Length: 153
Image (cartoon, rainbow, N blue to C red; front, top):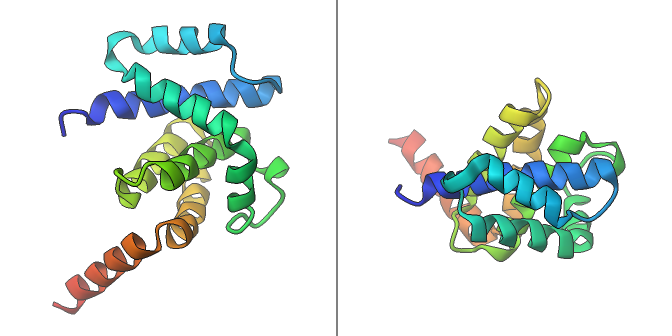
């Protein structure tokens, strides 16, 4: 996929910016965003990066309200890397129907593997699978049916 890598890098950078924002307990500042974008130089889809960071920041209350349906504990106790990855993915589930739910899920799991704790990606996978069923019902059910059909053959 030609556009995949720049968007993957945009997600990586966005998770870093969201994480910094969370641990510093302040909205992502232009300096942080510029620094993160500079780290990825020309390998990043800068517009998508900005869309993700600004979108998650603006929609954080709605995203967190959705996450409470799938998270088994207080969001405040979820690892900062994992909650940053989850928020990013839920934003994409909610606002980027052009991106298949499996792509969002797989990208988030890879981000959790890259930046999170040893088992964090399993937690992210479980939460986002529940969120996919909730926020992308038709697409989720179609994928589930396709997997079942594949197993049956």
